[in-house]
Length: 100
Image (tube, rainbow, N blue to C red; front, side, top):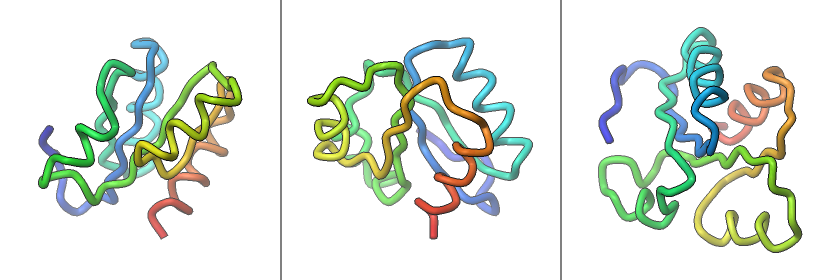
């Protein structure tokens, strides 16, 4: 997992729908973030064990809001869990907060 621009703030988001991931990537890139997206098949713990990216915050995006999913994401190392649908302004605000 390589980061393309070292000058941009970095965030990793996990999104399970490719079409949404493309839109999120476009929006975040436009807003000045280096934000590689990962599919839900990627383990947050696996990302966090990678020395190159372990200090980059991970945000989960999901339609699933079941009671057990949210704490599971946080316990795995996510800094935020955003349930879909969401507004892009909410996403960028929460990313800025995670990076602060």
